[in-house]
Structures are given as C-alpha cells and as structure tokens.
Length: 108
Length: 333
Image (cartoon, rainbow over all chains, first blue to last red; front, side):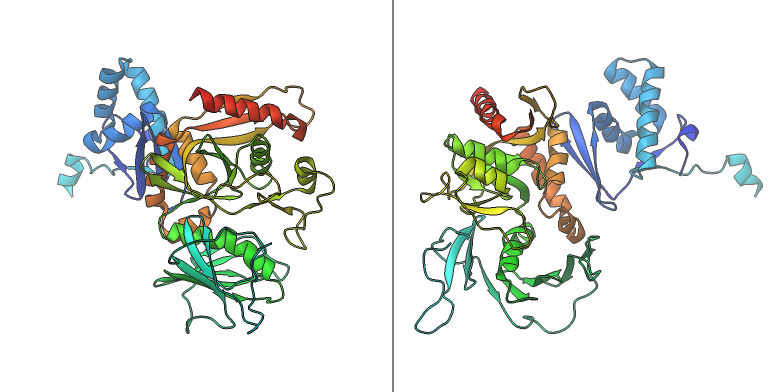
C-alpha cells in the first residue's frame, strides 16, 4: 500500500469492494464489511468518494474539486491527500500499483 | 405478575397463552413473571423450554464468541448458525434455538426460570427480530401526543429514568430496554414491549414511593421490576406508534454547576452511527452478516426521524425540567 507521502497526481485510487457507502443528505456513512466498523464522511469526503470510481487518478479528482468548490489547487490537493491517506490507513481505498516505466519494460 | 393462571390445576400442565410482544404474536407455555400483553390471532412464533436440543448433530464453530467470561472461564455468549437454525448459548442460562417460527430453550438451570425470561425478552427476541430484518435498539420509549419518543442509551445511561419522568407527566410507556423499529406508511414506527420497567431502587422509590417494595429483577441483580399500568405506576400503550424523535441522554457529572437542559440535533450521518452504537445485538448482527440491510434501514430512519443529544444535570430532582424541555422540543417540530 502506498504511503501518504507517495501520493501523486497520477496515482490511481481504487475503492475497496468490501465497503458499503450510504449517502445521507450531502454526507455519507461507510461500512467496512471486513472489520464491521462504520465511518462518517462530511460533504467534501462524500463527493471525493463519489469521484473516485469515475476519475480514479488523484489529479483528475483534484481538478474536479477546484471546479466544483472554487478552491485553489493547493487547497484541493491538501484536502484530497488528507482524506485519501486516512482512507488508505483504514483500508477503505488502495492505490493501484503503477506499471513499470516503459523503457524498463522494454529492456527486459 | 400475570393475572391469569399459568398452570391448569386439573391436569397440572402449563397453560399455553399468546402474547403480543415487540409486534410479534408469541405463543408459550412458559411461566412468565413479567406482565406481557395478551395477543390475539395466530402466533408468529412459539417459545417453550425443552429437556433436550430440538435437533440432533453438532453446529459448526461459532460465528461470534463474547469476550466476557463467566466464573468458569466460559464465554458468556456464543452464537452458532446452521441452515435455518441459530443457536444462542449462554452457559449459565441455557441454549436458545432460534428457528423461523419457534424458539426452544434448553435451560442450564430449570430452577432459575427468571434468567431464561430475562434473556428471552432481551437478547434472544432481539436476535430473532434481526433475523427477520427488524432492528431492535437499546432504548426506552414513551408515547407523546400519539407518537413514539425514544431514549437511546447503554445500561445505566439514563433511558429508563427519562421514560419514567415522561410517564409521570402523563406519557404512556411503550417499551423499556428494547425498541423494535420498522418502516410504516408515516415513516417509521416503534413497536411496544410490555408493561414493566426495570429501575434502580432509588429511582423506583423516587417515582413510586418508599413503600412500594418491588421485587428484584433477579436475585443477583440490583434493579427492581416496576409494573406499569392497571393501578401501578403510569400507563402502558400496547400499540405500534409512529416515531417522532430519538434522544441521546448525556448527564452532566454530579457537582457540575450547569443545570440547564440543552438539546442538540445530530446530522443524519452521526445519527446512523448512534443507531449502530445502540443496537441491542450489534455483535450478533455483525457476526451474521446482517449489517448491509440494517445500514440501509438505519439510513432511512436517520433521514425520517430526528436524533438529538439531550444534555441535562445529574439528579432525579432535575427530571421534571428535563421533561418540560423535551415536550417543548417536540412541540417545536
């Protein structure tokens, strides 16, 4: 699993298939079926969770947050990185392993 | 105590009766000491005690084992599943077999039926309800203006004393300890329990007078049984009532100088977490894999019924003011 510091704009995030997501007004509750634990997401967290399956790459999600919430790119990245790191720590999302660089793959 | 004889004197055998409990018609020959409301019509399930298990063969390993142990070091509760049959094992009380239309108890101590009754009316029936998709909350509830008001808390958290304070103000009791909820045409409804409360002796004395002399819930328990209605304390409402609000009691520590009553609404997200936290048999639901359907229902419940934190001073003498604050809050809805 990637460490928070390793998150980059081209990092692709995947939702855990063992998590249920339930929207309540603008917020949401997550149920981790493996641990039986519940987590609450605020409005921003709820939106990020919804954007992950559609956009995957953090850079694209960041762009959507800048557009939808009228915040700076730095602020959007800060909020995004904080949440993704926390979700990764709890095993609710994971970073998709990056393929080896093309030149390395070709040399093998 | 039940007012009808529980045994047929001519034959010496137990009399079968049907009770209306948590929205279920329960037929049983068990000599209940609690005053259970009679139930007309066909039973949804039967409850009886037997000297042997109702089925042969072993169950697979338990899906849940409580971390709490009895004096012999055995887990206080284990939960087994085999096909359509579930088994709740309480080593000091007995084995409860839960089927689709019956519950059978093989008592560990036939001389102590009160413990069988306590477990049946709490954990066992709550588990049976959850099997059928009806969540049961750890709550007491009263009826105000025809609607259910629930108080969610752990043991000793203040739910029964709040319900008793509301009853003193004229609100009938709907249930004490277990509140089964279900969707209804108006949103959600609370199902009634039975006409009895379990109170600490000081609470019973406060609400009913020092000479009441109520029996203990069990010889090893501190709480006492307080009958409700029929000339006893307050009144009982044996109907299903639409839910209008939940309150989460938070008592200020004794000695805290703040004496005002505060009521804070929770957002639906936090309300769902509180419903989960105050599920009567949360561990069993998790072990059985019933959480997804319950999450769906709790989400709908949180959007339909407000949940509020009720912060109030410690001390029974403050409860009338707390009651007024609740009634005013309900009027403001």
